[in-house]
Length: 319
Image (cartoon, rainbow, N blue to C red; front, side):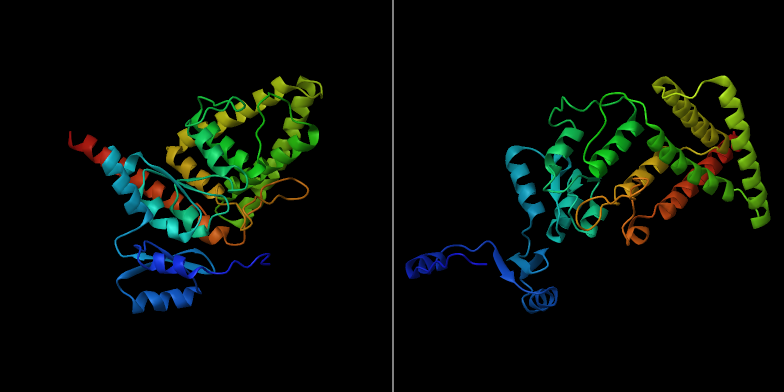
């Protein structure tokens, strides 16, 4: 709704006509902007929203502007951190050293960016600057564990908060978290099963192992909410997980980053995370599998590790 109409001043328009024009904002559909770009080859059209296009001269862009400022003040593009949320930011984000997509940004922006923060209405820039240590954050502790900090960034963006004081899980939350892990363990066993029959037998063995573990734990410690007991169990789980990677001969470092980047894509088009109403598990947007599923990148990384091993073996055989 327009609350006030301001009449144009003819002298102002005449003055503007004699000034250099650096950029024009035009209301047009994507189809109209494509046609205009074809008709005016000396102009460059980019889009910052679904309803309008920015018109500038060829050779000009946000990235080129940063490059020129850097030339004047003595820094290069690799030293620049840039934030973006629209398709007219793609060139800039692809060209700087650290690119950050806002949580409300387009899917194409999130694919290009190296880091995803919260939306522009949730202090996304401030949170990213805290994450990278540009701004000090007295409220959030940073671990020496690289992977822990990555996951903390994920929960900070999804939950919009983090837990800074050590505390034990209540029974409901602990049960949900254990359920998440059980699902992954079942996937792990299925990926080791040659057939459906073998998978069924393995599940029966898992049920037996669960009953056996319940009897063992019941005799070992009383049932009570215990921070030390929870931490000890989780560390053992982490240690067993690393042990499984060791015995597989797989380096999880890059694969962890692949999965982390995929998880950071779980922001919905409204710029927020959505949760299961019962378990509070973070849900995946409808297009997540198509755009962020990590399996292809994991497969590529495993091929790289296999090739690296073959090269190492060949060198040892020739020595």
